[in-house]
Image (tube, rainbow, N blue to C red):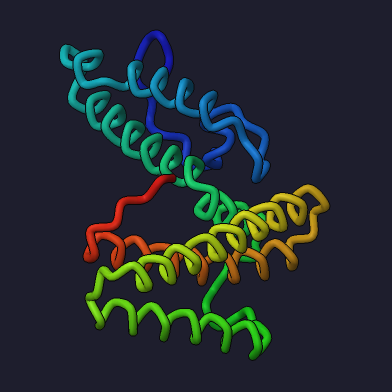
Length: 190
């Protein structure tokens, strides 16, 4: 966008460049949000209401692109996956082979969660077991976020890919835990 007219979105800019950020896994999310709001203010429909139709279209396209970029950079997992794409090493399901022990552990956790969900029992034992699984899962996610961050800092893209692949499993487990907690009427402290 220039002072004179709204321009067609620059498709060559990556999401980090849109927000004048260096492509890193660790970014200041508050600063990103400030930049996002500033851009959205500039692209607001009220600002282009009296402009030619083409500029209104460009403004809407830019606004949509800024929203997509912001949502991607806001969430660490999405940011990491996007960084892999920028390094031309996207994470595809069949491209990473994780150790069988890891996959067996994940399957055991999922089976335990399925049992807890099917029991639909909010007794103290079930709540404690779910809390224990959540606590362990959160610790694993935090460790993997640190691993991803370090891998990107060291430019070890293969390690970042593996850690992000593992992280996706634990994020999925976290979503299942949230669903079971909701079903059982258990509120989260975090």
